[in-house]
Image (tube, rainbow, N blue to C red; front, side, top):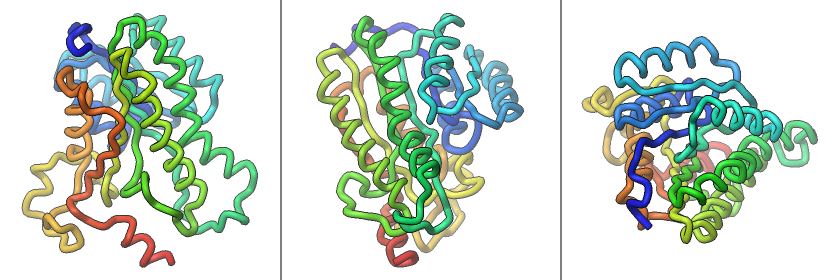
Length: 264
């Protein structure tokens, strides 16, 4: 089914105004892909990014504000994007809440637990179910989710029960979508970033070359471009044979093992 839709593409990126989402938006814009960028609170940064992408790459960029953990807001964002003439071909589910505070499962409030599950797992159902019908009609689509190192096989993550449970469920959901929608020319894959922190989330690879990081086997920090390049490969027309994959981009670092040692 590859090649059935080779025209101009539009990607919907959640949490696309900052961090890895922003660097992914830049990467996709450089490929000539139009964008719908979701943000929740970063309006000024989203507007700056949209202006930059239009001036630099000539891409058409729409901004949609909303909380992806809320189904009604997801519906509104998709409706808004479609009304602007943006048929969504590519969905990059980059956004997802994370709590840095150490919290045991039994100490979560119902509200906080629901927010973590809705933001990291249910949001994927909300947006995928809204966008897949149109992808089926055009017999082409790409769905990218974001996980963490070894998410498909981890048995537990101390103090991170809600996040880990949601992402492990998301890994399974990604594989299920890949199986169910393969006949419609739609692929689904999960990308799992390594220990990419702070300003490195928006940086290019060449800025990391020469910057030593002994905790990473390849010897340098990871960057947002490392993740964005993998996403750009997976959404390519000729990458249709890769679906249902969970791909770690860690520089060889045992990220989850490090976490267990520090938090266990």
